[in-house]
Length: 325
Length: 139
Image 1: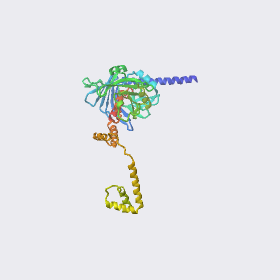
Image 2: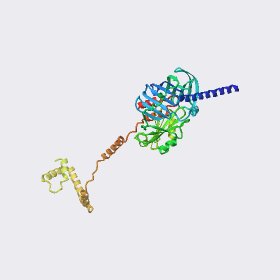
Image 3: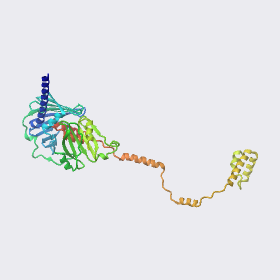
Image 4: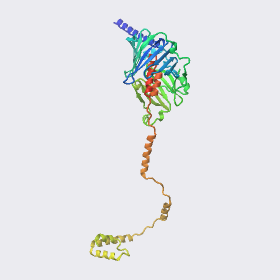
């Protein structure tokens, strides 16, 4: 009996280890597997499903290109080459440069964090784009977090399809390769042309990423307030400064549990002097704008206000905001 | 002459220089009306009582004081209702001029959130593009 129990335990541990290995493979494959293909992106912000068709190419060496053919972002071309991302709307005009937001964690650390906060399970999946798949489920260990499902190419580990359910378990997004070809791609296709006009000026509301909070504080000239109680499992991921239309910079921090992300933004000089109706008698009242995709919660903070955006249970977002010093 | 007319004339009956015809008519009525004679007797007792009281002298300088007050310019005053009206007007203007609470525009925050939070390493970079575009559309 004991031997049977031990065998079951070892089998389960082996399964978990296999699932973690699958996840690591998927994280690595995203940038290491050269391919080109067509993706369908489906987003359900409300009752209607919004679809887009995207041409995608990656050289397996950190350069990738995606071009939106149809849908809300039709005409958008994005070239990614760490640490930058270049965006152009339409076939002409300048490329705008902004920091690539793939995350500061390496694949091993990220996989470890995901495994800490999500239960991994796998099963055989269907054939997608002509490729056999393995389905990998990422089920949050804490309620109120979104859920992910990945269908990985059995040979390469590349994510061929990804689905996300929101904090309430409702489907919100799916990305799927309709066609894919593995192998080298033309370098000219995924790299910024040498004669490309790049607008490096800081556009309004541009985000500039910093390596640390200290570096951002040095640029900002004052301390950045950070919440003392982020939701369980979430840690500070990245720090940015955002250029304000009125001039100056405000801090933006992202918080991640490995899969889901929250964005905390500060605004300046508005919270204390807003018009009638918002703050009378409710000095620390959170205002929430809910949607199926994300919750946006704001709270008066210092001379301005703090805004937290994320797909997470409202109570957890409010607790995080209220823990700001 | 009847009683009503007679009693109206009685107050002046004892005053000097009254018209002789009216005095004669009053006397004729009194001669035949005990009620009016009683009224005349009451009036005469009242007059006698008043005449017996000493007159109080007004305070010295009373009239000068009244004259001085009269000589001063009249202060400008508004009717009381205007104060209440003005208060109400101020309240209405305060509500109208003080800007209403700004509508919470979440779009800029959503757009930036999608920029920094999606495009992750699990095959959903394009999803972030679509979500950011949708956020722009709802602006």
